[in-house]
Length: 67
Image 1 (cartoon, one colour):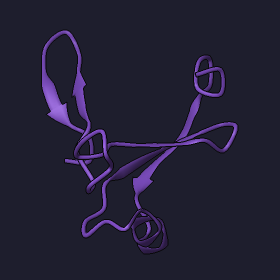
Image 2 (tube, helix red, strand yellow; image 1 turned 90 degrees about the vertical axis):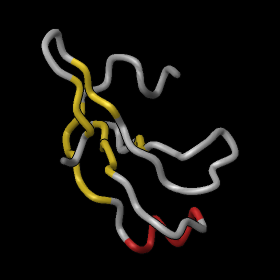
Image 3 (cartoon, helix red, strand yellow; image 1 turned 45 degrees about the vertical axis):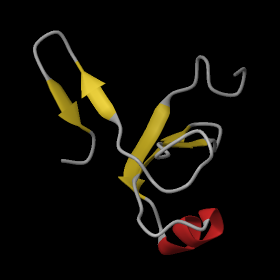
Image 4 (cartoon, helix red, strand yellow; image 1 turned 180 degrees about the vertical axis):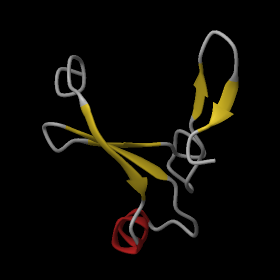
């Protein structure tokens, strides 16, 4: 967690085909790129069976990142 805590998100982008293929996934998702190069993205489940969606919640709304 040390490579995530305190980092800044520098980019929000779609997962590339190469990244998707590396995971062995059928579909892609949104990728959060941190300032130190770490990539964060949602998986469908703990086993990493496919891509998932990230929900964003503020005080007024909940929405899916990427919509």
